[in-house]
Length: 298
Image (cartoon, rainbow, N blue to C red; front, side):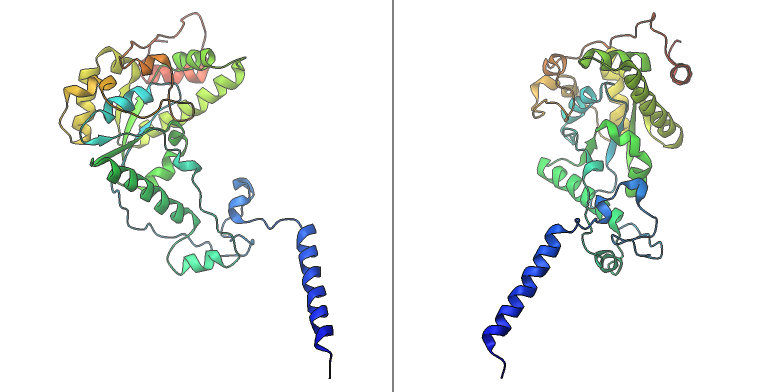
């Protein structure tokens, strides 16, 4: 008869061997840990073929959210606080939904989700929708607006997620955007700034042409805020309220980096006239072309 003590020692040695092997092995890479450009379509977290399954849209708690599409440094925080001052509109700080991800961490997770008519992207959409609904419910209002500028870069996905979403397309002269970014940054890389503005501007123009949104300009918003906010309210189906213009009387949360503008101008509670671009600074040809399309002098 085998000595039970020897059996226990043998099991312990095997377990220690497994643990040591795991410790020196490279970590398992999940689908969500892989760079997007290296993910193969129709593959799960283990690289196995899923048949190219794409989940159908799940029901949404918020059917028609509102997204402000704009470049950075285009006055989206000002528009946010004006809207948030309305009794029926909740416009919180930048929510950065595109950076909120779902991780399918095991090889069988994608198959399990498929049985529920879900995939990783639709799971993210469900989570995004839940976040909007949670914020809207907490506010006690009935219209929610997300003004995160990088949403402009993923507007096709937002449109897939919420087919009934509404869009406020906020334009600003590209030259003024470049100047604002340059003034904001320490040791600015001028070439990188022009490339960043061009990227936003291209996607914004694409959205302007392809979406049935309400287009406004930062210049008009600061020059005649009543007229512009009246037009926005009409588009959103809510009555205009004069208190929107006195946004400094309302609580809009903390103004801090990564969540929107945090300058002294926005903290002042007053609307400041938009600064025009420097006419002596030439724009790249493509930005000049788009500025002309938007009706700006060139």
